[in-house]
Image (tube, rainbow, N blue to C red; front, side):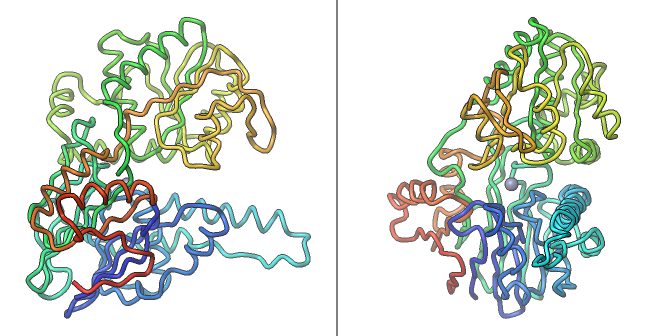
Length: 460
Ligand SMILES: [Zn+2]
């Protein structure tokens, strides 16, 4: 048996791992690579050829860096099943179509922009809505801990990864060996989701290492801090703008706001969720209570819908969104994209960044070279829609909302999952984070810790 590291090796996006067994090849995740524009374009259009030998696919969760190349795989001829949990399947119903929509929109825009350029070769989208729909037809779902055989004699179960709704780690038993793919590992005590489950005693552990060198603040602290920021901003008549990822972060922040309201820790000002994708995904959250933890279940028993209350407004249409541009008075606006690079958030930032009364609250990771990162750095001027604007609004950064395990969580995971492991493979992390985690793991596991390179193949 062999494993090929075809993506997310020495980087945090584009997860794809191919397990070659005697009875066929199993691909775990097929994510989009997200980085500098040209490199991303090149890598996403030319997926590593071994993935097209897959006979079955398992998907850990709906984030695009794990699922976003599935339509490319299908477009390239893959006709087999894509196994995942029911919640991930439903989330992908929106996520993959949204990704296709962005691909189609961007290529149309570029082709139009270069229409008069004689050297311009019109480009095709990476994939279309039709490719995304075909991909969804190939989904086959299993709940956590329901074993199935994606290939003859190869047994798989999903365990709850506690990272986003429906997220799973994949435990594969083949040829007398247990191989654990961690997917992205969640945190203990985050809202909505149960704590991550760790299948014990794997022979081989392929685990993420995103925060191998960092910890996050407690979520309660960030929630209290958010309450304070809203009280202060509302007191001076300002607006609170929150760029937020559509999947998980928006639902967590809305639930946090609902809790703050119930405790009278924020005034009942209007709260707008202005992102069609986030609105659709919130609907998926409502229909998967089997993924909830005790905390949200008892909250629902007492207070009803965590995402529905008097002061919340969802604004799916363009007209409703545009009406917010001229709306008066204090309000909270949550909008996508989370890193401020696309979507409706840019309009809200353009309209509100120039006033000292307003506050921009950053609740998620901001990659380099994004508008979100420039806001985190509190630059006095930023470009929005290509136009330089003075930043007078206050910027606050809350780190407690992360959906990834910090360093301690990762080490605890490794201890449980691979007490007697023959080998750990650290993936899905920047080099510094991987090195830090590997050094600590080597204290207990010696040379059984590997950081595989892109394209590396290892015999198990
Ligand atoms: Zn993820």
